[in-house]
Length: 155
Image 1 (tube, rainbow, N blue to C red):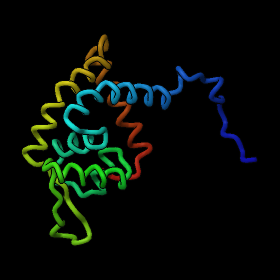
Image 2 (image 1 turned 120 degrees about the vertical axis):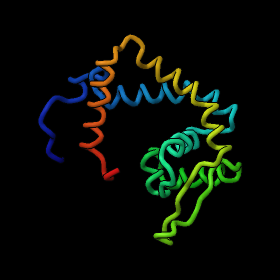
Image 3 (image 1 turned 30 degrees about the horizontal axis):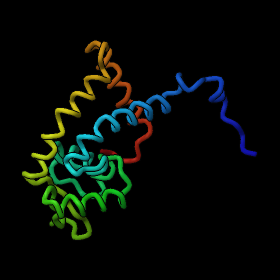
Image 4 (image 1 turned 120 degrees about the horizontal axis):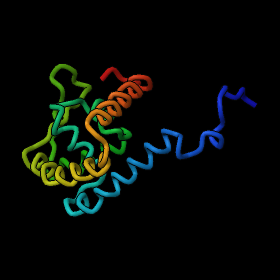
């Protein structure tokens, strides 16, 4: 048997005190709250994530988009196939690196995302109900530090 890490076991910590469990519950609830509006637009969570990222970041490579959209590259590729077929994104060979492909959102894709944004904003606001601006800023700063601690990419 492998050596156990020092510190308390999960049963001693408890699920309600274990941050990864809480983060998964929060994101699961957030994604579930968007599903109805996503379905009305013919979108899935990976498609929505891709459009959200592309509405903020111009022309990332598919690899970068997979990191930002928190999606496996194979899942993202299928989502991009569908988004491209629907005219919501376009893929372009990277002129600086012929092995890479860049992705950009079309006007139709931007419009689809803007249709979804009010629901996303409402779900986001609901998560932070009763949490003042200072507490929210501290929480986001903590999340950013945690991401820096665990990330594999410099972007």
